[in-house]
Length: 278
Image 1: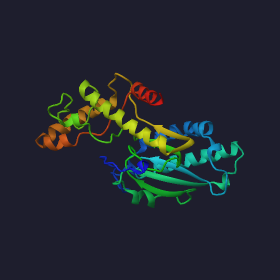
Image 2: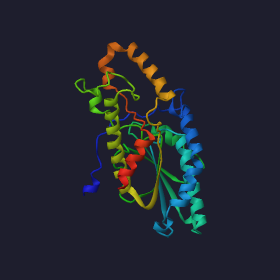
Image 3: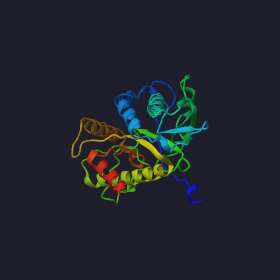
Image 4: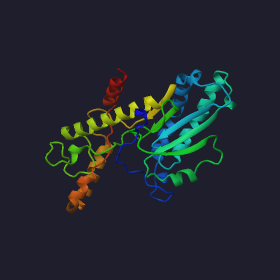
């Protein structure tokens, strides 16, 4: 069957695993703050948008949640629990029997992600069945109409691959071996923007097939104000210049390791979602 052809090659560099000093688990407080800030927004969205009438009303109900780009925790656990609590409130508000529903949570990230650390650190009092799903969220991950709630926090700015123009010395978008790009070079910006658009389209096309009717998708995406050089961009420009100068004798290696990040502007992201809805 055509729908079963889900295998595709993607590049990926997962976050640092383990629970050591340099691990993602100990260096993701910024993402945790974002999770805390959006907690009430997620709850309100579920209460307003989730359509329980699409779910079969019997004792074998299974409510499936997928966190895309989960890394190694612990942020993913806070997000998942907030979703489960919010779904429980939705059941109560519509006088459905929540006790008849079992929750299954799929934790997704690249195959190289440290799923051992993730699964070993699952909360002891979790209210769900857990499973790891390795693979890129830029393509298909689940059967059609199988997931009720998708969540993806601080992940969609990671591209599926480096735009080929960026490492082609004959291209006007060649990024000259830089390991980070901000917004000064228009040709480079267009190359990253086009790759981001292709990746977002692939992501949305996959999720629309996998989401059940009436289900919802929660996306927290990094954006920057249009036509601005924010403090983060200024900082990474300086750091990038220093690193390139230190490693200029490894120019070929740097060129092959150009970055996978593309923080869209809020205007650009809005236009892409509008195009997808037409």
